[in-house]
Image (cartoon, rainbow, N blue to C red):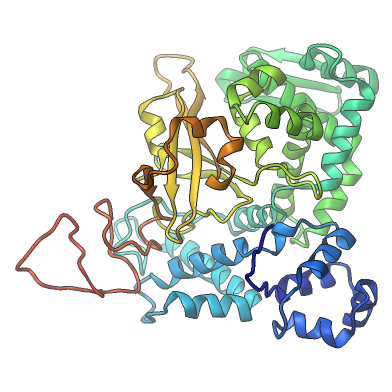
Length: 479
């Protein structure tokens, strides 16, 4: 991370590392060869974190320098802005006030967001069908009123930058040790399951009618897989089971480290970690990272080279955050045509709305008009950051006349500062800012007051109630 001449105040992040390793200030200061009083000043943001000490902390505690950036802070500020846009709050908090609250009391800010999410979930659950949820009279987009365990699991994965070092290196080591590159991957993994664990893989033609993809029969040691499953999905399924059988204890250890309560939250994390292992096994870290760099992250070329799906390539690219061997920090989003977010991870400053609808200008929605084709975009966020992204729909055709096909969009993006490493930048004139699409996190949190695509008024601004004039934007504000 290049911080330039900007002073880096990262007290809360230094403190978080110290607590993760169960160190006192005196013990951590001794490890870093500094005085405990100096460390205390850094943790309380009385002194900035100098570049040399930053590098020492990264090497000592095996964290990436980008972890000390303000990406998480930006995301938390945005979520707070969305929360306080709810009309149930009479506060008119400005961005600098919210930022100060996040910097000074990050734990309190996150707990407040969790409390609001729980409130909205209860309101949605108990409100009559014809009655709008309190505080949502002006919302029009899809909502994230879902299980708090689901949210907690997803946010913990995001907090890890969607990278799990022990899991990743274990998968890569197994791939290299067993020589999984010596033949067709699916057949090789299937043979490994049989030889190592006595597990047979059986195709089941009835699963399509049961809306089932796979099922593991522990007693009979059989992995039943839908006959219609693609070769890429089949290999992923086999790799996931290998992770469960070979590295169950390591997965358990990772889950316990999350600190999430036992039950649904940990079960959801277990699914995520299992899927992560599968991706790490079929796309081993160093092989894949080098291939991505050599091919300038051409997604179609990477698909063919490794025999995987478009989604698998995109998701794996978003996880390449190994300390000392980082890939490009990408954001990854999977969503349906209604804008419901199915998966979302970001190693960048980019973030999307957590409450309310998504920005209508995203190429995510454009991709549904050109199914199966890439929709590229240069996007300028509200803080001036510019991203280059690609989106494509994926899905399978219906199995009968009476079934509706299910298509979802996969979006992968990164900062335009990496444009020279991305093949898709060739289609843009990066010097012409007119190519930058002015996107936002969603109308509820967006600060753009002149967007003609706005669905609801911008929060934090006074509205002009005049009825003598009407412009393209119906929500005029008073600066």
